[in-house]
Amino acid sequence: MEKERHVLVVFPHPDDEAFGVSGTIMKYIDSGVPVTYACLTYGDMGRSLGYPPFATRESLHDIRKQEVEKSAKIMGLTDLRLLGYRDKTLEFEPPGHLASVIKDMMDELNPSRIISFYPGYSVHPDHEATAEAVLKAVEDMPPSERPALQLVAFAKSTLDDLGDPDIINDITGYEDKKEQVMAAHISQTGPLLKRLAAGTVEGQEAREAYLKLEQFYSYDID
Image 1 (spheres, rainbow, N blue to C red):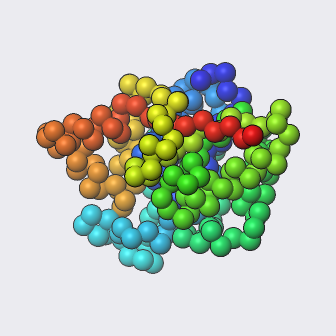
Image 2 (cartoon, rainbow, N blue to C red):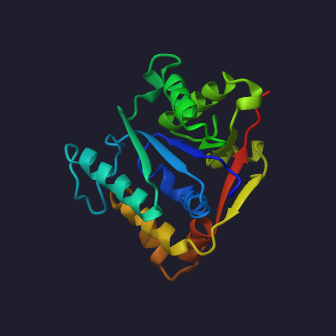
């Protein structure tokens, strides 16, 4: 991991980094690799207002901003970029706009690796729009200059099409901090945290799924 020049993480919502990537982010940071997290929206149109509800539709914007800032602090991430696009509308941005924004960041940061969602396997329209923009930005680069793509896929009904993940990061030693990162997004993660804390078979399975390994797919652009 220490061989990477710079890692750029691009997701649409606060908390997207928490579930399957935060252990990897912390490992990169602890290895001395600069990491930038570009979060495209504030996630303020999300259905969850807390468990039990403690946010309102009006207050959720500020709450989720504070949550992702807390998450970044726990991870030791010093370059958090909140781009402020409207939640649940990324698919309606003008063609090429998001790709251009991402390309500008790549030109600035010169990352050797990008972490984002896998197109077609990430369920939410904002996730898919983000994945497509990342791919478009990278496709438009000369092949010799393209960063490696390390992508998250979680559309369970179709994952068999992709086969097994080919990047598997053991995050042993980061379990407690990852749980803290997830807890930072408490407006969204309450039920999951309750499952993780349960002394049940389901709770143990959840801990194994979220706190032991983080799995990704590489993506080669022809």
